[in-house]
Image 1 (tube, rainbow, N blue to C red):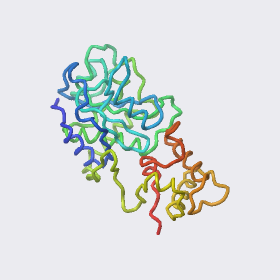
Image 2 (spheres, one colour):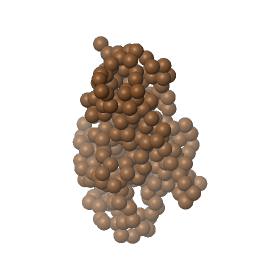
Image 3 (cartoon, rainbow, N blue to C red):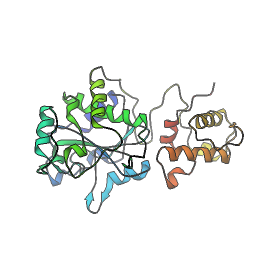
Image 4 (cartoon, helix red, strand yellow):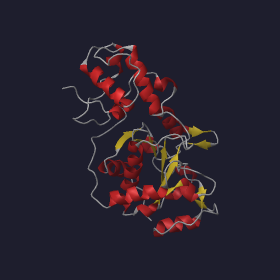
Length: 298
C-alpha cells in the first residue's frame, strides 16, 4: 500500500529502468480523479488493447469512447517497446474485480481465481495497455515484452514491491481475457529478474518529438529527407535492415537512391509492427525508424 507516484516520479522511475518514454501532450493532468479516489496504490495491471497501429491506439487510450471515457490506462506500450504516457491519476482500466485478489496482491501471495467483482481496481492499480489484437496470432515482439517487464519493474522498484504486485487483467476479474499471447507467470519471472539487479540506468529525455537515440544507430532524419528522394548511404543502410527483417520488395538493391521499392519495403516493416492505413504508407516515421535500428553508415 502506497501513495501514487507523481508524474515526475513516474517518468524518472521508468527512464531509470531503461524504458523509452514518450509523454503524450496533456497526460500529466489527464485523469478520472473526479469519479473516485486514486490510491492507495497496490500494484500494476497488464492489458492488451485489441487494436492495431500505434497512433490510433494511443488516441483511443487517451480519449476513450462514449461508454468508457479516457484515459483508459497510464501508459500504452507499442510494438517497439516505447511507453507512451497518456494518464496521470485515476484511469478507466481495471474496473471492478475481486477483493480477495487485491488482498493477495497487497500480501504478494499466490493469486486466487477471481469470482466476485466487489472492488474498484481503478483506485488501486497502475495500468499499461499493450498494443496487440489479443487473438493469439498477433505477435508480441521481444522489445514489447521487455518494455512490459521494465515498466512494471520500474513501478515495483519505486514502491518497494516484488513481482507479485504485477497481474494481468484476467487475473483481476473473471470477465476479461487479457493479456493473451504470453503468461503472467512468465512476465512476473521477467520482472523478478529485473528487480534482482540494479536498474538499467536512465534513458535520454524523450518528449513527444524527441525520442532517444544511440551512437550505434542512425537518428531519424525526418520525413522531408525521404520525400526529397535522397541519394544517401543512409538509404542503403535502411534497405539492408529491411532485407534482414524479411521485408524486402526489392528486385535489385537496395541502393543509396530512395525509390518506390524502398517505400514498399518500408510499408511491409510498418505492417510488421502493427501499423495500418495511413500509418503504413511506406514513408518512415520516428517510431518505426527507431525500431528498425539502422546502423550509422561508415
